[in-house]
Length: 300
Image (cartoon, rainbow, N blue to C red):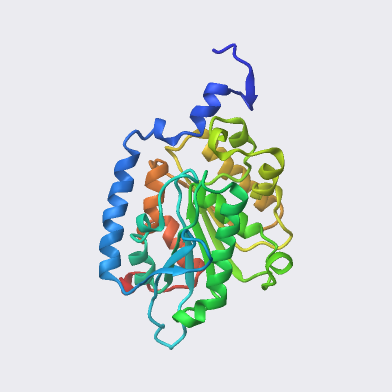
């Protein structure tokens, strides 16, 4: 029992800081990243791909494109845009090609996004770049053989946070694009209200003020029209991360939006990311069904 003052829910400051540090539960987290980096390099050698395609003016604004072939009836494949995690401060698209083999194998073009990290830019600019990448893919998908009318976004951890904001963006008002061009979104192990992040030790580098917190909290901006969403999290994640996902899914459901929720048994935070390369797991099975990809096992 602690007598320290509570700063968020029933957490004192040290407890809240720990809740937003998954590495306390997974001290070998870097081994996951090292494996992802090696496997991603192998996948870039194995699959046809376009590397370092610019979507914006800065050195950070680049994507890798892994095209899937047209379907048997000649239709262009759907396209999945993936946003990596790393607490907004770490990792790169080069660590996130490994997922492409599962998506391309199932018949979806896979796009891995790079963007500037904190503290090189602030949160507003990081999210602007994620939105710019999404808009670029929609405008250019047909040029690399994908179907812009079947565009989906996905991400893990801080990438899940970014996907939440992409799902609530007013694309018509702010970007001059069709309001519903994102056909579905998968957010895994994300954060959807940044107020506890602002109150935690993470804010030493995130540097959120109250306005930036509000602008970058998807749960505060749920629209009347939303794409179907899949929200996933692991049994072995920090309680706050699980709460964030559960409450976001519950609020979407309360407002009548289409949402599937997956509590993945036995998985820690970093295991959940690996599910984007597990076509036999419930997360990708649900995602492939969302995209209308059939006979997945036959495609592999």
